[in-house]
Length: 503
Ligand code: NAP
Image (cartoon, rainbow, N blue to C red):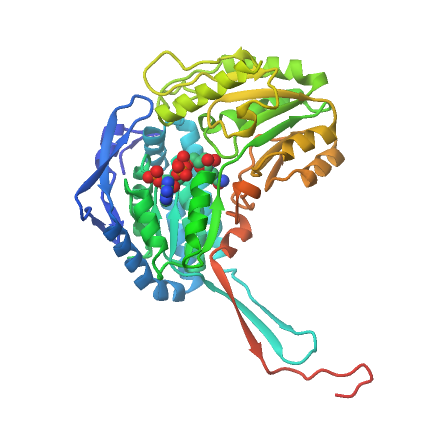
């Protein structure tokens, strides 16, 4: 991975230097069934390389390694765990060009966004390096005043991380960093479309000093079989999953067998609300960011835009002008603003959403079609006159399409927004602080961004409600997901005194 030439690494040299075997028990392993998994560039459809595809047996070996490493890693001094995470942060930062290029190659996002993902992922390693030494319990008296209550947080135990393709580095780092800080070991199953970045991260973690078996990475073409076998194994203690709501629901059902601790970061349907008193220029900037980050393939992506009737025309026109000026292309080209969608299925899904909406009366103001070029490119699209019953108002689009709806009053828009099974992020633009906070407190979402198009922050609890999942990643809440509380009842301490003074 020392193949950088400035901001971007040479793709051929980078691919030659990136590990393609499974990382298991501290070593690189070939698949027991000699399976390989092709990795393609979504901008060209060309095969970049292939990686070893793990089997159920390989995955169980990985869990065995995590289980054997657990007692020792859980007993490593917090300061030592912190130092290792800090070194990992420094290595990831130093190799940002290679990691960013790898993300762009296998996932498609523009290089500057891949670079931002590296910063974001590294931030979790640094934040949790700092949290590793601040795992606190409490020492208190109970109601009667007799005896003492002592609590301490202990590592949950070996974890399984199942991650999606849209943030190949950050979704892994957001789980691995707090788990390691808490003293947990893990098996990571990265998305089959983007395994390279996670294998590169495994190499860095080992170099940073993470002991053998603490982090294991098993790419596979058999997600259902591998994940199912791991979840049925008594040695596993926790699942943290990021991906679609449908898969999350299936895994939640499976988790009942071993009564696993479960964290789920699932799909979203983020509303973006523009009130009449909003700073319109800021709202348009925020809309471009909230919609087009990651080519629109983010769970926090603004999915439905509600503009007050008095500003809807101006907002839509300005947004359409911005979208029309954007360049689509290969993420490694410096001029590219929007890259390809991940695959043909996603391209077809986005197209079907636009067809459905226009069939119900929506009007195309910008874009409105796939780009006429190889790869899975869809033109940045703005629709207005979108009716409430259009499918894209209720389902995750996961592409660069902004449907604009109008509203007349606050009550009405809150009801329409909350009428959704999803509840991840929301964006609110208004100059009225009281309105911003009132709306934020009434929206059924886990996160609300006020006057900004970005909600993620390593120091904040990321997560949703309803069908968007449960559990939080980031901030002090993130490490709590990897700790279980032990309560020690102590028959000791100063005896209580009655109000009159007698013991
Ligand atoms: P997905 O199809 O659910 O896949 C996610 C992961 O689960 C992949 O590693 C996948 O493996 C694995 N998987 C798929 N089916 C499985 C099964 N039956 N049993 C066990 N594992 C299975 O989701 P995706 O399309 O990759 O990701 C997009 C979704 O993720 C969107 O809905 C997005 O909103 C959500 N997301 C949420 C957050 C958040 O923090 N809330 C963040 C990012 C993305 P394969 O790759 O081998 O299929």
